[in-house]
Length: 459
Image 1 (cartoon, one colour):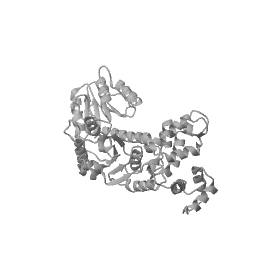
Image 2 (cartoon, one colour):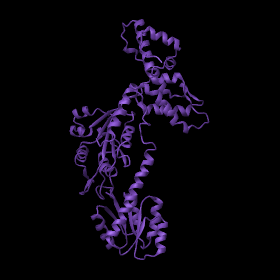
Image 3 (cartoon, one colour):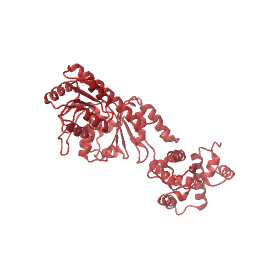
Image 4 (tube, one colour):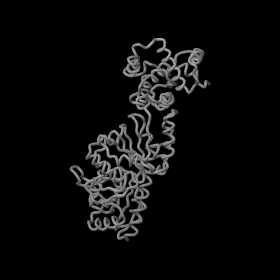
């Protein structure tokens, strides 16, 4: 529901114009001076300003200038009973959308308002697209050649064109928001808003206002009406991250919106209809949360129409190499030296493959970013890595898990075989790369492949 701010020093005009526009389905705010209008613009979401030209202290032209300084995209329609060509030209030069003379018929005014609102809607959508996506998220920013990620890509391709709710599960740092954006920007809603809410970032009362909005005076500090994320996402996609943190009372309200597509703002009685696609994400196991009574089962089934599970990085180690190349390219422009980083030394790569990556892809990105800063040459070396990262990796061998009566020869053979199999998998069966990872020559690798009778489909 779009909001029009009406500014006029004559109260009768404020009442009449509010009634006309509300009958057309618009929400209205009123101000009887330019200064009051500026205050309301600071605290409210407004889609159009309809202002009188001649007002005391601050006239319509000055108000127009102030609005365009703060928000150049906000359309302003000027009204005046003192219409002259000079004033009309001046208003248009200062950025007014249009100019209308008092007295005017209601039908003409509504036409002007609807045109201005439509223009503003297009401008907002285009601006959001520019800020949130330069590419169309055709999986170009989601890196992965592993089977687990290929399954994720296939699910995105199938679900994106639909309106189905999607539940994305995965540990922190696996890229859940990136997948949600990819679904949106490959859907029919791609030209509409993509709105993100982190359900764990706000207290329950603040999150309710953030999601559903509030009316003026709904609670202490609610000095003006505010639209919630559901309204802002109308026609597009709402992404609720960390959905398991949602309080029980908000779970009930969310279920109603999903079922009926309606809600009321906090402190309001007006029913608001929205058309959104909802994508939720969590790093918890929701079925366990249901058993513990912390998450509603009926809401779970509403959200979980299509489920996408993102594998942790430790289970997709073959993706470490392409991810590393991607982050090297990403941070290349931030280098403060003229020496481009071409890659990482083999010992760094081995450390990467041996690390457990509790922070997943986000941790890898941070390690690469830090190493790019510390690197003084064209190759990232072990000395460029964070000390705590090296300590964790070097101490990562689980020797305690080996039985005390294990035979040394058999154990070494088992470890050697598993390391070769893993290196071949990581290198996509390219033996020269696998040998490099293992720190041996290609001929030595061939001998060990024959020793263990491995089926490697060698290249």
